[in-house]
Image (cartoon, rainbow, N blue to C red; front, side, top):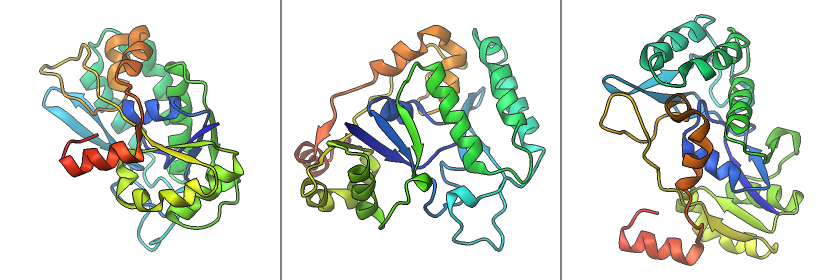
Length: 250
């Protein structure tokens, strides 16, 4: 049993989807504190001028410390604004017509007062369907999680019977020192390793790290194959330590 855990991001990039695809169960960490202007709230599309942000407006004033699953969408006009930006950038992409209406329908279900986490998680499930990812997705808030940071991750892994925890490289700063907590519970830690692939993209030169919509609109049915072409063997804790010590990015 391989488990990966991450916060539900808005219009995720390819590496996030590959992390899901590496796991048997993926836990959407929706009960921790929301971070304003984070990937939970925004992501990027590729337009004529390069990458541009799409940010979901949320209710934040007077709600400091709110959890991700408590964050409310603030503006009912945001879906139309986002859809116009997406259409402007991708309407001439080869597979725009195959996916745009599906995205429009999802956006249209989340007016002001809706929960941001519900929007993000529905989009993540849709992306998994488009990329033929069959991983089980569950919400951390449904698991009655305990602890913080590494203790929380160990608890979730143990509850799910994990033998391996596939960690995002960005968690290395605090997770490497806490690996013994996982090992004491019989859980191996491996760090996700992904190299962004290049593909046909409008408005050259190629720019990586846009939302996965960019790949779908440009490559259509080849997208799952291209997504998985960036996969590399997960790094052990020792390999990641050596990589960080040498200054080479994982």
